[in-house]
Image (cartoon, rainbow, N blue to C red; front, side):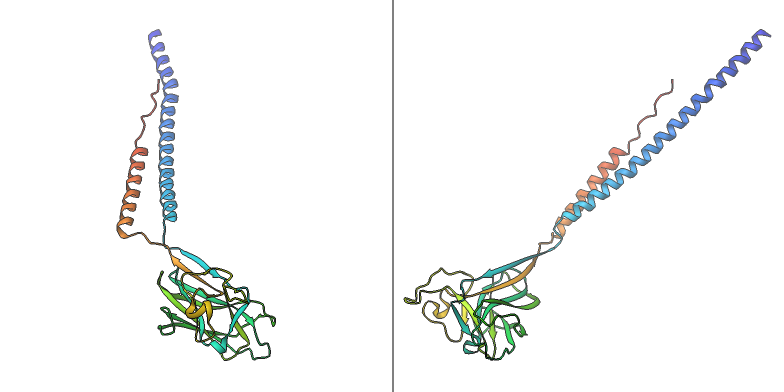
Length: 267
């Protein structure tokens, strides 16, 4: 009977201690499996974030705007628009699109009508190029005193070839305004008081240019233009290599993080 009692006591003790250990093992396994699943999801999110962030840093063809400003003249010299019609500037494109082109004008004859002015964009250098765009406006905000003032014509987005020359011609029916140009000169000798301010072209006019400005010479109008270029887009082979690299990184992360560590041993 004593033997039976000890046997029943041992069974009770076994049950008493085995149940907690069995529950502890099950809980540990469940917790480890949960942590493993969470780590896998976190790794997936990290990989996706890495791919997205890297893609955002790639040159996807964003616009890069630039403005060229040339002001060789102080206002000492200007050409009446109607007298020299057409007149303007030969320039070299630095962007693939032209947004705007402007000249500095000043009032010469305030008593004349403020008639509309027209800007014509031609291909090539000179009067005979093909017409690419034409814009007309009425100048606003030009003081009645001889004060050089910017008057800009908006082109939206006229396509150009970088490095090619173009001609911007101004025309009108009034001499109210004059086109400011330079460099300034010594009024007694006619010598230039400054260098050629722009090597990408020169001023152009049907009349009124002489001395150092004959045939354009070293003279330029006061002008500015704004354009933009599209950043280079990766070639298809470059995209393929990058995607292959992303795939390799993802496979490595999944393989490294996917290894299940053994459960801790229960003593």
